[in-house]
Length: 543
Image (cartoon, rainbow, N blue to C red; front, side, top):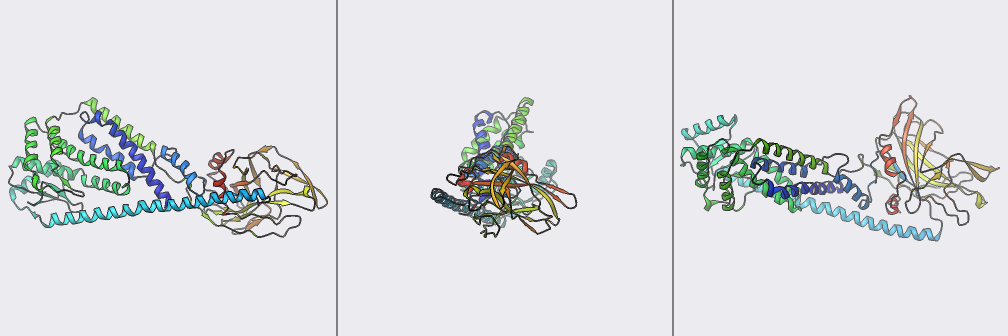
């Protein structure tokens, strides 16, 4: 659920950035661009607040993926869909044990941080659900009360005017027409069964036609759906004050744009008649203090004054301003897409399974092992169950040499004949290491006397190892291993390598088919020769 919380937070920030940009542009566009444009441009903000889409390289994804790498301790810090494994060497000196205790304290702090994050998403979710339920209940009660207290109009003259208006506006399935003297102004209520309600049918025919045209414009534009999208955004982003400002601006521009849509085909005298209708149709003494989602023709005194001014000063948009409007809308839409949203860097979920590794019985090999954490990804044909450092060892301390040991499980329904696995190494501070990965042991009888190198130093090494064909569901547990020189200091017995990161690159099956890890190059570019914080690495060992 923390992933969802981070997605919501990123959407809230990205939507706010676009909204604040509109706020900065408001003094410039307020009296220049059409009210219809100013109404619908906020759809970009609402969509940005609700839909977690965006390009792979977006601002929010970059910021939150960096943020996630520091605050998330239970998720894998990689975008690769392949199995990833870290290896930590066993503690051998008092100093190393002290360092391990320090790292354990860091891990405990990270665990507490993860617990806190868990409460964060819960603290967001509960108010969001309660707020949405409250709005739904209030809207249901309000709509039911208004409809139950309204009576369908049966006046033939009014019905004929209503049908004519619907025909002129191209509306085939018109809402019901009703009268309710208890409502403060003409309105349209309901989504499934919408109803246009008139508080006063004694107005002159011209005013009634304008009232009908206004309410049917709301119906035709699906303004009720727009407003519910806003309400959903408010519930999801209840903690963001910018979203409340966006809601007020949309409500304000809804009526202004509806007025503009009605009067754009009227002459100056008819616009004055429309303004008179606006005043005559409203019963100020009955205006409600709060409505959840309604499409009232009325508004408070300040808004009515603004609407009357907009009606009287209306001018048709020039072609130049229309082009500016379109260009500005495209730029804002492009900006909203580029800002993007957070998405998890791991496309496939992983399951961490701490495993206590037993002690092997093998000649000339130490039984010292570390606790490892295998990570399983269902889509991988082979899973690296375990990877650790072991040592060739005998009575002579100079004969103690390290090698990598691993266990791989065939997770497919085919026999694996060969595979390629990449390895990266890190020191105790999380710095990448250039190692001599390929060596041959020099022996004197059963005693290892040294190694000879067959490779240059490199950050990455591809291990190609197939002791025998690996049947479906079978494990490969090599008794030997891959010898490497890791900067072992014979004087104090310390080793340079502290962590190893492994990733399956390619798998060959007995039928000749080859599986190539599609995320391998992404994994390699992310981690090769890159430093990783030790406290992040350490979280993979459950120590």
